[in-house]
Image (cartoon, rainbow, N blue to C red; front, side, top):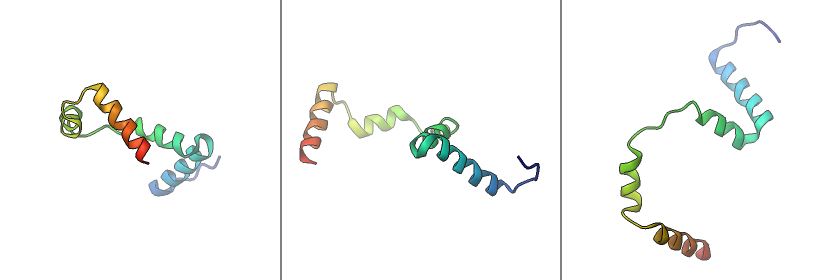
Length: 69
C-alpha cells in the first residue's frame, strides 16, 4: 500500500468502495450505521407514529397492507 497522504474526500471514497466490495451495499450501510448516533427521542416519535396500538393491531395492519400491495 502506498504511504502517500490522501485528501479526506478521497479517503472516504476509497473506504466506501472497499467496504462495498467486501460487504456489499447493504453490509456497507450496516457497518457505517454503527458509528452514527441517532437523534431525537425514539419513544416520543414512536408514540406519534403508532399511538397506543397493540401488537395484534399492528400485525393486522401489516397484514392488511401486504395484501393491498
